[in-house]
Amino acid sequence: MLRTDWILHVDLDQFIAAVEIARRPDLRGRPVVVGGSGDPTERRKVVATASYEAREFGIRSGMPLRTAARRCPDAVFLASDPQAYEEASERVMATLREFPVVVEVFGWDEAFLGARTDDPEALAAEIQQGVLARTGLACSIGIGDNKHRAKLATGFAKPAGISWLTKDNWVAVMAERPTDALWGIGQKTAAKLAEMGLVTVGQLAGADPEVLARRFGPATGPYLRLLARGAGGTTVTADPWVPRSRSHEITYEHDLTDPAEIAGQVSAMATTLARESAEEGRRVARVGVKVRFVPFVTRVRSMTLTAPTNETSEIEQAALTVLDRFEETRPVRLLGVRVEFEEPRSDQR
Image 1 (cartoon, rainbow, N blue to C red):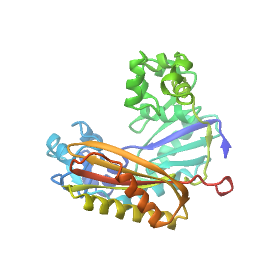
Image 2: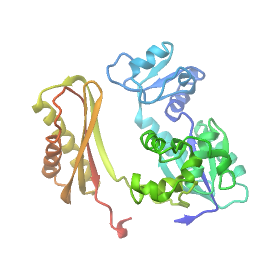
Image 3: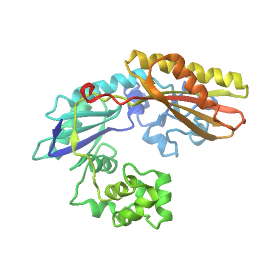
Image 4: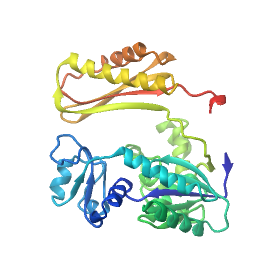
């Protein structure tokens, strides 16, 4: 690991759509929607991503494809191709590693870079040019003195720009923004903060940490205040990312009503996850089940195992035990199973 002078956050613009447009240049400038099999009439299939042109019609990730088609009948709908996106991501990360930086991959389409340089903006421009030349993909880059600020800066840089966010301009840029503009605060937490009269980042930054601790807990409460003051990690590591969990979920074309069929689906997903976990050499410490009932009510339950294991029968039984904890009897439109791995020992990291 290396403590760096500057942290750059690289975020590929409209990544999935951009990969598809690179394969089909005739789509450039047109509204493109990627999701499912590319058939907008499919029931319960959702948008994986939308090009900027499609977003102008209000199309967003997670939206049902049918809704997207109603908002923009002239959009081009394409099937999702994860393998192509994985390959494109690998080319981008390989390109980033050619620069004098430490690359910490943070997903398919983003990475943190640690850099020792007197001119981070010039470096960012070189990186943008290099990624575009090698992969045909545009990226936005945020420059910060920690990860939190760098990631937020990227949002101000889109599309294909460069932006700064440091302790010097933090208050001027962020103080009047809503609390959910912070990385790590979602709409639910923002709503709870609003109930306390804390609507803006500046208000949260000046809040009493003891009051926040009573509302959100002794660790989370003061941490939210630190986020509002721009705090964030400053260490970038090139160590491979090790997933803490694995999950599978299925949205069904037709609602499930038979308890035996529902249990069978959960059992099958748990069995698959147990096999995949064993193949990775990981042991499962916790098992969760997600159920979405008709019309759109989602519930999640989980349990910690008595001891970490990769035994299929134990993981399957745990999933079925968790399933029994659901009291609702309404038809089911989605099922999911999630396994969380035991933390690796320090000598395995």
